[in-house]
Length: 270
Ligand SMILES: [Zn+2]
Image 1 (tube, protein in one colour):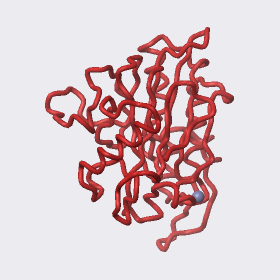
Image 2 (cartoon, rainbow, N blue to C red):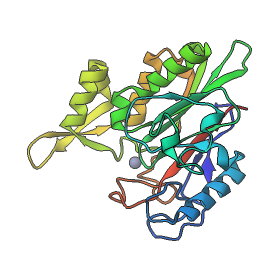
Image 3 (tube, helix red, strand yellow):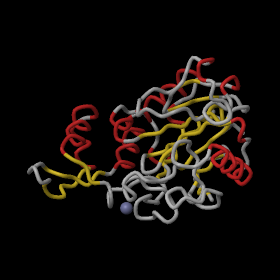
Image 4 (cartoon, rainbow, N blue to C red):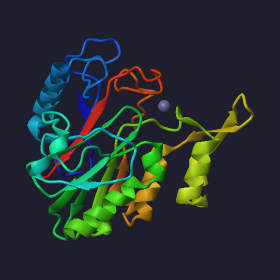
């Protein structure tokens, strides 16, 4: 049904593909995205099931169409439901998004993935109280755009958090055992994040066109982005699940060549 972080104290969950009502071979069974072949009612029923198990109000989830940006939106209860129960986007000033922060307990932050990296965060004050939470979707484009660092900046800038007191959990995603990329991804990471990020790539041979290929440690890059943004290494946790290796438990875009359902990772204020 879902997996959790050992470290975060805020209510949260990373969904798996198990426990839902989708019956298509590709989406069986807890598909949480529209447009993957399931009826919309099936997706909402899955969201209700997930909410019941993971203890969040499904009608409060915001999860907008994702566009591989590095923008992080500050949201509150006005946006609760947007992307699932409310899709009248024309009435809102944000219509797509890959990241959110909030300090409002009446909204649940949600990011969708199926190999991309979901990252959930909480900012605590000096007494250990949670003052705000954040969620981001980081594929390789969001990763090189340092969306994880943008989320940290937002938590600090909007809610007075200190990066030193932010905790982050990097959820189930594709790991370097399965994530082979081309020279374009390697070059973009080095150009935008710096030379030291070369250590997250291992040369894996050549493409038919003779270009270098690499196994890429996408969760590792995001963990480094977070320490570069000021988080303590011991406040960052990367879950061990590789969505591609464990395609029976998770949806994997790469394993299925794109014919798959979608998971949802959620976090909310206590
Ligand atoms: Zn793997």
